[in-house]
Length: 382
Image (cartoon, rainbow, N blue to C red; front, side):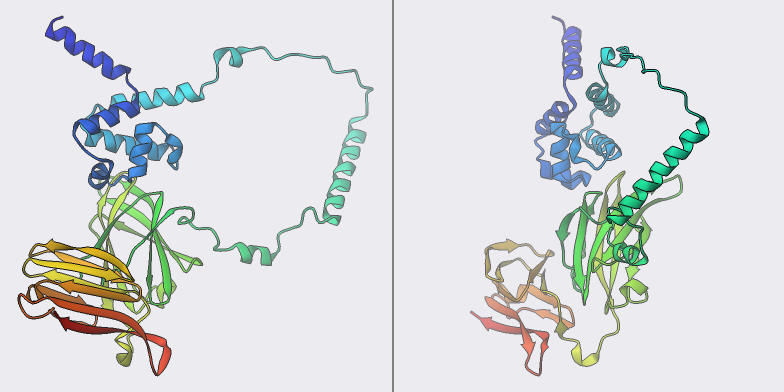
């Protein structure tokens, strides 16, 4: 067999394969994991796995399945149009009824001859029967007309954010690196600020010659919704000037960094503080959040709410944000090589150079008002 024949045989083998097999073999040949592909394409791992398993029931609709398939194929440098045609052929095979069933003649039968009845009399009898049935249904309370209370009870119950996978995140404190997350039609980001619990979800992405923009919705306290749109790279600031968010005391900045066909990479940051009572600047209703900025390389280990994390060495120039609900203990190998950033507190180095420092943060009630919590901080040289 000559080289030309071998190439033709290989091409025929590829054409004979199914969509999922082609995708999986291409990924594995490049030594990529599902997580690698997810990070580079903004497609969640379960959707990548669904494409490789040809389990298209995992997608909200065919538009999403086609969009993810196109993105995945482009990322692997495959023949995208060929894969899309294979997908369409599979869908036709699965949904098309057999030709014999479609062309089978319908069995005919003769209606028994009924006596002729005057048309007006027949209509009158039918109308009377319908009225009697309706009266019976209302009398037995089988049906009832919608009342104004029914409408008010159901108003605001459903949301585009419902029935989505929830990813819980914390809004970064001021001075800390922004939080970057991926959003698609299947998930929602959940975070809290002050007394507001919010879910951020993607509605759709629109592209035209002049602009690429995404529409988002925020579900607030599972009661009301606020929608907004933003172009790629455009920052939207959420604050108390928005009627639905008037309880916020700290603004939230949301920026779509990357917009694909059906998914978005979103950056979330803290904005400026507003409506703060001076005496209560240290009051908190959220989690403990501490950002470590590494000036020099240093060893660090920590315990958050009883969960131990083994020590790691982090290089100069990197940052790490640690969080806890009630108690956070951090041990730093080089106190002078790490700067501590906390909201409302002046940034400072953790301790003397080349000394091990242990820092303990805990959330405790104010002795004068148990309903108010403050974060206490303690340092120990070791």
